[in-house]
Length: 251
Image (cartoon, rainbow, N blue to C red; front, side, top):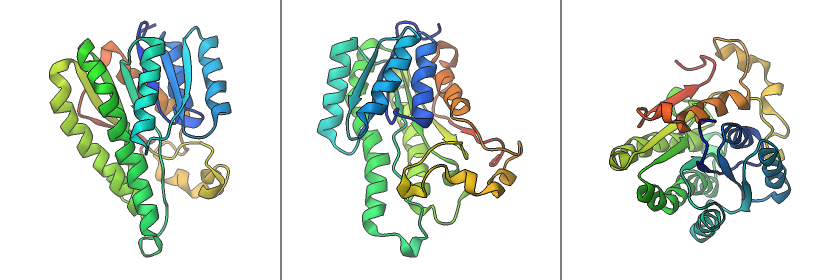
C-alpha cells in the first residue's frame, strides 16, 4: 500500500494502458480520478474495478483539448477527493500517415491532443501539488521519438516535444518536491479504435516482434508497473527522465 492517502488523476483511463495504471494505483492504496473524453461506460467500469480494490474512484468525462473542460474536471476531482497528488497524462491522439499524405488538420489534432492537452492538465493540477509540496507527474512519450519510424512524423514530433517539456518542467518544480518523468512504451497488446486499423493492429503484423530483444509485444500491465513505481516514495529521486518500456526494441 505504498500510495495510501494519495490521489491520482489518470487521463485516457477507459481501457488499455490507462486502465491498467488506474487499477495499479488503486492496488497500492491510492484513490483515482478516471478520465476519458467519450465513453462514460468505460470509465464507470474502471471505477468499479478500482473500488473493488478498496479505492475511492471518480469517473469524469473531459476533453483534453478543451482547457475549460480540463479545469472543470480537476476542480470536480479535488472537490470530491480533496487534492490531486499524481497526474498521469496518458490520453493520446495519433495519426499514422506518410508525411506527404498527412493532412494539416491531422497534424494540428495530434499536437492539440497530446501537447496542448498535457499542458492544460499540468497547469490545472500544479498549484495543488505546489501547495502540498509533493507531486508526481508522468507524461507519455513513445518509441517513435527516439528510434524514428516512417509514417509517424506527427506522433514522433509530438512525443519528442514531450521529452523536452518533461525535462524543463522537472527543473522548474523540483524544489517543491514534485517529480516529472515520461514513459515511452514500445508495441503493446492494446485495442485501438476502428479508425486506427480496427481491433489490435499488432496482431496483424507478426514481424513487429522481431524488433524486440524479447521476441514479443508488451502488455499494458508492464507499462503500468513502471508508471506506478514512478508514483511511489521509492522513486522520489528520479526526475526529468524518459524511461523506455519496449522489450528491447530500442536501446
